[in-house]
Length: 86
Image 1 (cartoon, rainbow, N blue to C red):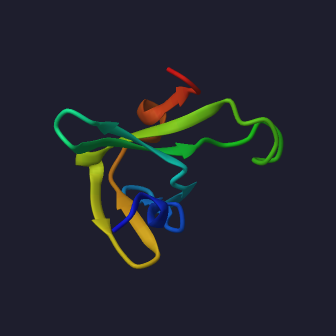
Image 2: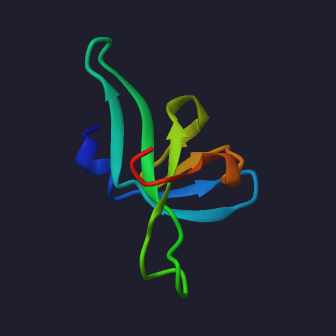
């Protein structure tokens, strides 16, 4: 699977069945050749669409399954929601 393929998959939290969005980026450890985490844009400031300044940083260990259309994760939403760039 290519990293670009991840952008086409919707990320869903299997703990509460919440749709988090689509993976937008990854954090990659180039020395070990491993994916550390995936990045999913957080909710918008107004009506869930405008002015995103938060993002979900989901550790790879929290990914439970990658399917054809979705990525299932098990996370606590508030713990994984970070300010962009942190």
